[in-house]
Length: 70
Image (cartoon, one colour):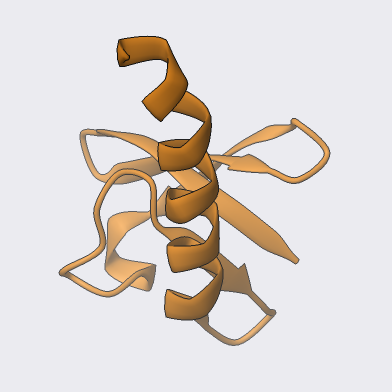
């Protein structure tokens, strides 16, 4: 399952799953260098940043928004 970090509030990362559901993940469970927009791969035992998926989504968003500013 994947979730994107929307924001940080206190000791939680507020994340949006692919189905749109918002979930709270304790900061202590995610890598300390995680930032807003990172895609997390979630399993029972661990949470990791999926660098490939984060990059794909960032590139897609940049392509969409590029036309807005030109």
